[in-house]
Image (cartoon, rainbow over all chains, first blue to last red; front, side, top):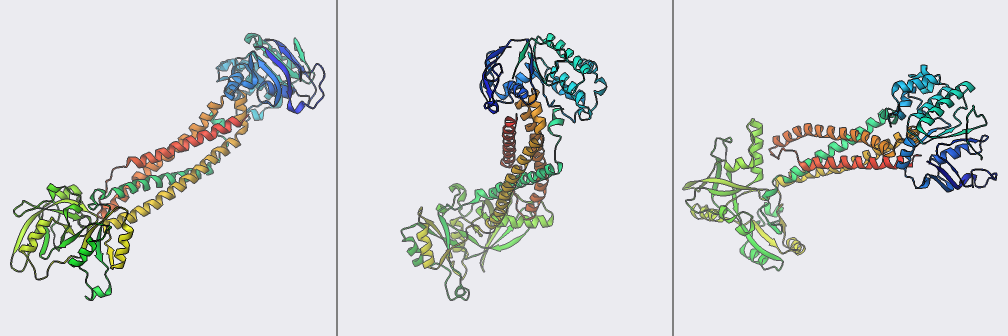
Length: 213
Length: 391
């Protein structure tokens, strides 16, 4: 599924002077299965980019298409389908349920498509070093541990793109590398594209396209 | 797990209060509606007078009481009324001038005997079929129309004695006897009740029987006409009222004891019915507000579910179903409590000699089901609106 931007300009950024190669106000396409990085300093609009792509923010001019489908034409129910089976996401604020355990947080997403078995979920938790936290309430985890849970939850669905909004901001280099490796592997299995927004660290990410703000 | 997320921030006390409010509203509704129907049904078939017909009598004053004024109608007065343009027809209600008593003649009901007075009205004024309202000397029985108070009185007596109540149908099959007499002779007649009336307080007999009694058992006091049956032309009651005012006449209260009872009970149940509607309206508001508050408290959870791919329809359905269960519990509780209350209220009616149909009225059950449906619909629409607004 190709992503196309055509002169997209978020309302609140309309009065800001953007560089000539900025994604805002320009037209471009991102081919399916691409590995993309969006590198910018804080406050430049990385989250605007991800929330716009996810249909959460729709106060913009111009057009965005997934394949032939204009995002503005999608209903709430359509978005539910996209978010559950076409686009996976790790939100910058994680969006976990703090009262639920780690496993329950994963299951609440996993049960939509029964993507993984419980043992596969456990293996992924082990791989990211939080295997001993399975039955711990998320509220009791550190931010770094919560980030790893959010990453695994994002993978618990079929997807054509995964969007990660500063997913490693609270991880050390080793855990970031492990997380990136897991995402990379599942993306390859799903034949999916990968969009990573970052504040400047690439964690050895082997990207093909770099977007600028 | 979805329920655990969506319903975790609940104020139980507020839910219980809203539940109680709605439960009271539902219970009042079903009870008042049921008894409004049953009380109105009671004796409904027994209006023997047409809607444009009135029984007219002279106003009773102190002069009448001390015999300075007449309470009976003379021929001239009747002719005068007949001649009025707004009058369709006038017929005197004839009273007996002979002594007459009635006694039970059946083992089905307790024995009693009492002096009575009987009246007759022109057949054209009453709605009974010609064949059953005929009598001639030598007939097996005299057909009569009983005032309903008579049956109420009998049932009150039966209730006090612990004897089973007498239904309309049973009363119609019970044997009674008239004893007609004067100083010199007496004669007995079998009596059969062919109907009841709420409008007359005396026993009605066919004209032929009255004439037979007045002719063969005349007393020294001649029969007087104290009441006139008067049919008024459609839409001209106003003129008739003015005429009555000018001539010191008044309509006899068409519904006597039973009518008053029905009227009082009907008014009470109507008040309860309106209170129930008000309570239901308020409890709908409270419950809808509660649902809205619940969704507001769980906004983060709903937003997160939507963002990870849950469909708005599924979340709406979960919230809607939860409240449908609450409403169903309220409806069911109110029907059960109504069933219990009905048992006691029906007993009170029986004790008062009033036998009303003790089956559940389908209309009252339907009314609570309709309110249940409306509750569910409003709540679903409300939930859908809130979820659709959530990003």
